[in-house]
Length: 382
Ligand SMILES: Cc1cc2nc3c(=O)[nH]c(=O)nc-3n(C[C@H](O)[C@H](O)[C@H](O)COP(=O)(O)OP(=O)(O)OC[C@H]3O[C@@H](n4cnc5c(N)ncnc54)[C@H](O)[C@@H]3O)c2cc1C
Image (spheres, rainbow, N blue to C red):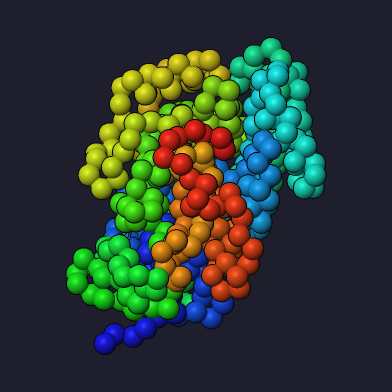
């Protein structure tokens, strides 16, 4: 019989990587199983960059998790000698004249002591002349927020975990079987892996891996990301422009960083997506839609050439709240997922929360329970 681990973590995306990291700090012997490898091109964590911001409307719980996660990321990057995996570009959330969510964001930022500036229309126009701001538009600028180099950051956490003693198996894990207590999981190569506890952090695959519990309650959607060439125009580089979010028009993006191009992505949920089988070519309709957005908001880039693309998937819950909970049928099986297009930044806080629940019986947050997840999408968290 093979050895028994303290914990097996299935999935080496951002949630699994940070859960493992915290388990190791708690002295656990951990085996990680991933069927495609850490932050692969199929995983939701496999993109080039992800935003970390604090403004979350009235959803203060996520503001606090971001606030907890940002120093965890930067301390980690400093310790491994890769501080450049975070870029402090600042993040600008654009708001319409009557924008209740933005007003709520400001109140939450103030309450939590988060540095920010409220920029009125004239200040926006003056500071960012490359951006067209409609009358009445205003914004919230967070100078200390920015961008994470997502794929490389997760792979760095996994490497750090391996150095700290974790083991990594490239294999697909099967669903938990048995009742009340799970002794082992089986992989597609026929291996049985025994552990005291198991974490399923399978991102968009959670509904397939745990069909009884999450089938029809995790909605993977196709999302396209575009990088437009700026030809070195510094108005669109991180020197002159922060990361920006325009929830009114449904877009967000990055200035040109490291000559990758000006990143533009539509945050509205795309079609249902199978991360195993579907190809990842961009669609002409969505490219045209992104160009229409550019023409409105960054007119100088409306005709810029498309120089790179990514097709990824969100792994949405019904309302956008995460699933971080114990499996209802097993006392030693835990679930981490439902990042819903905004989960990446929170990796460190998610890992800390889950390990606190697992090892210290820390209080449960009702918003993260399986019971609150519905079978019909009704997005509330952005
Ligand atoms: C285009 C796009 C833009 C985004 N932008 C942002 C942003 O700006 N800011 C932000 O905070 N968040 C953002 N997100 C959301 C964020 O990236 C995700 O919420 C997060 O990466 C999810 O991580 P995860 O670990 O849950 O899942 P994943 O990264 O998908 O990891 C799941 C892992 O499980 C493995 N796996 C699955 N099934 C099995 C099995 N049976 N056996 C073994 N291994 C298995 C997979 O191979 C995979 O590696 C964005 C997402 C997308 C797609």
